[in-house]
Each structure stands twice: as C-alpha cells, then as structure tokens.
Image (cartoon, rainbow, N blue to C red):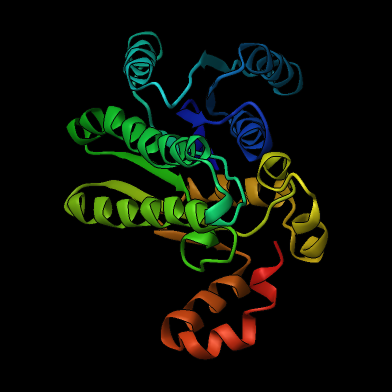
Length: 263
C-alpha cells in the first residue's frame, strides 16, 4: 500500500459516490487526492473532511468535463501547481434510462459529452507527461452495461461500449510503455446515480438485491491502483453473463431477458 505514498491521484466526478469515497481511501493510504467536479462547495467540504479524518491535504479544482477548454486549463493548473499526475481516475459520468423513442437529444448529447468525450479529453491531457516519464495509470470507470446491453438504456450502454472500446485500443497504443490502462465495469451501485437515471424508482426497487455497496466498489478500485490489472468486473457473475451473451446471444436472451429488463 506504500505505492500511494505522496502520489498525485486525480479523480473526476469526485463530489459524491464512489469518487468521493476513493478520495478518502487515497488520503488514508498516504496519497494526495486531487478532486475534480462541478460543485465548488461540495469539493471544498470533502477536502475539509479528508483533512479532518486523515490529516492529509486534498486539493480540488472545479471542472465541468463537458467543457474541453476548461479541461485544458484545469490540467495545466494541476501540472503547474502540484506536479506529475500518477493516476487518473475517469469517474465522471451519468445515465438516463429511457426507451429511445421517448429520449430527448439533450440527455443523449449530455451522456456522450460527459461519459465519452470528457473522459477522452481528460485522458489526452495526462498522456504526454505519462509518456515522457514512461509511467502512470489511467483507470476508466465504464460499466457492465458496456458489455451487456439492457432494454431502456440504449444510449447509456452505447456510451459505456465506447469507453471500453477506447480503453482497450489505448492499452494497445501504449503496449510498449510502463503506463497501465484499466477499465472498471460495475453493475448497479448504491449511489445517487439513480436519482437521475431512474426517476421512477422502479429499477432500483427491482434490482435491490443486486446493488453493490459503494464502499466495496471504491475499495476495489483503490486496490486496482496498486496493480497492472487490465479490467475489474463487479460483481463477477454479471461478467459471466456478458460472456454468455457474446458466446450464445440467443440463449442468453431467453435465460437472462427478464433479469436484464427490469427498468
């Protein structure tokens, strides 16, 4: 665990959920969490909590990952004021569960802007320095939905398919370096994600027994920073379902159709 001592760990979407919990974990392990999110007030409060509970200083920069110019400015500030970024965790993201014929383009564009374009733009900002120093770790928070599509999440699933495709291709581009590229594919997590994604509350109610603890997910992602593992799937049985789907899609539809259509 000493690997994180004095390491600079940048976390997008750090104002709540697993991003916030990862920030606390990083500080407890001696790292320097650098929090990025839109809410200045929430980030300030989290940094104060981290200082109080761990004695470590966390740093924050307000950032809307939909704004590519702001991304450039914030990452330039980080490099100038803090130094090398050892780990980037692309955690910012959101979903809206709608049937496609009922979805609106504002939500569709928003999901791609945050989940895909923002993630790529943040990654692009850290790569030159990581390649120059031949070290670093980029962790992209994707989703089981990127492997196993479900009804009423066509656009959200598409964004996470894109994240996985990007992650796997980038790993190949950097195969001859010491830079690690990892993807995290969680199932439903107990966070405020569903306040936007599932306004009716029916999905959360239907999959309650499958929902992952945010603490558990944050802890596993923290441990992932200490490895060169390419992919983390949570829970494992959902990944087995995605493997079954790719091998035998017709059979998987029949066996898992009801489970995957609970939105």
